Length: 140
Image (cartoon, one colour):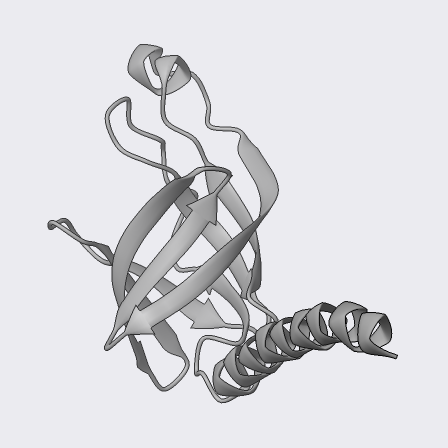
């Protein structure tokens, strides 16, 4: 009986840790569900041209309550430097809203930091550290 108790205690402790992690994920999902970011946002105006020095120029963003983000964007780089036509790329990322009006987008191991503001059906997305806001309109 004593050996049974010793083996069961680590299993119960492990199950509690898993449940706590699930509870945190559930709490984050519930919090995001209330976020004005949830939904699909399309960039206003013409397709932006990527620039050689800046990060991606988003053209469409779809935020989900589970923390996933589908992003269509024009990438910078050498094509932008030589003036070729922009091509739209798409990827699935994750995002977090670490507080206030801050947005962190995880692309693999790198994180892009923004501040944002939602006003009616408009999303204003500004790179932290300065720059002009990209303006998006919410679909539907």
